[in-house]
Image 1 (tube, helix red, strand yellow):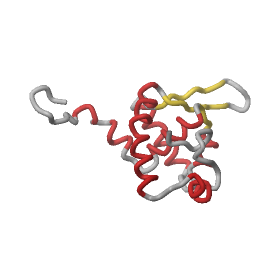
Image 2 (cartoon, one colour; image 1 turned 45 degrees about the vertical axis):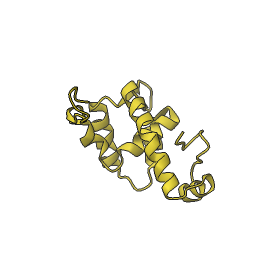
Image 3 (cartoon, one colour; image 1 turned 90 degrees about the vertical axis):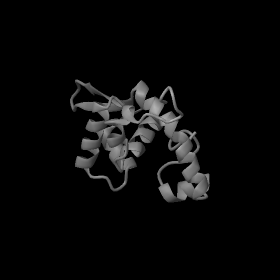
Length: 130
């Protein structure tokens, strides 16, 4: 906030807002936050409808903003996992009230979420907003 008024300075949002305003960014942040660590192929399964290129580009952009980290393991076959950084965890915590608001506004219940998502539940173990 600006010191002499109640206005919120938007300068810190430069760059970050471009990243998180993309269609899949907040969904990726939330899924990684739910899982802790996740592989590219598992993200593809969770994000029904995303193309591999869009996912790769979004992950790269979120890495550049230091919201997610990437760990490559020198194994055969190669394995890469994505995880939230401290800033990513902070962003996810900040977004949770919006997710809860949206779910409440759309009258989503745990049962409805399961029937719509068909993969995971809203119980806190997989897809969670709390």
